Image (tube, rainbow, N blue to C red; front, side, top):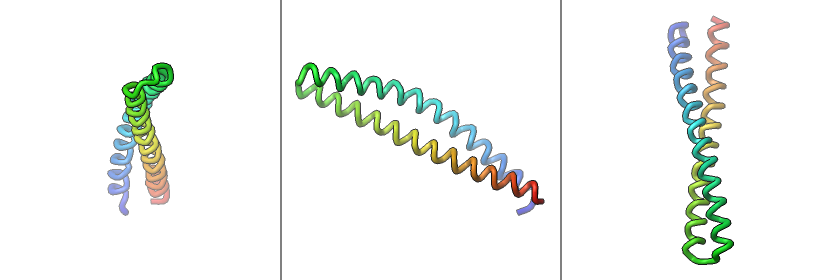
Length: 95
């Protein structure tokens, strides 16, 4: 790959990395709130022992798990992009 193509790829990877890190910050903040809400719903379900609160608790837990999966996917994406960025930087040094 020629130098200009490597630089173009590096800019693209960097932009994607910045966006993924921003998304991760948002997801982590949302996860914190959703996990707190799920814990509150779980406690309410334990105290009230009604089917409605049990349903709310399981819904809240599913939402928290979905955010946790989204966070994991973003962490994995960031690691892949950082790896790709390192590879491209190494190509610049070699060229």
